[in-house]
Image (cartoon, one colour):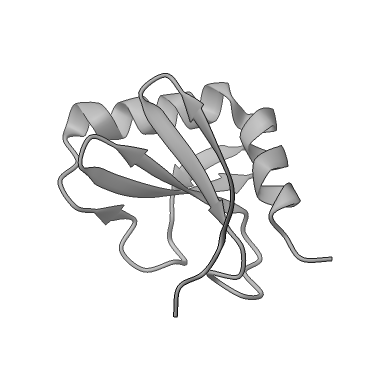
Length: 92
C-alpha cells in the first residue's frame, strides 16, 4: 500500500517528509528525513528530538555518521516548524 505524502520541507541538505497514516495511532510525532541516499525517522518529543524508537528501523539505506548528525541537528534547530509540518499531516 502506498501512503500519500502530505507535505515536505527542505532545510539545508535535509528533506523532511510527513506521510499521512504511515503509523496510524502513533502517539509520538515523527517525520522521515531524506539525506544523501538514505532516510532517518526522527521523533519529536516535548524536550527535543531523537531517532525513532517506535517506527521500525530509524536509519534506512546508507546514512553516514555525519549525515545522521546533520539530520538530528537540523530537526532540533527547526523543531517548531517541523512539528507544525507533522501536525498538518494528521487527519481531522
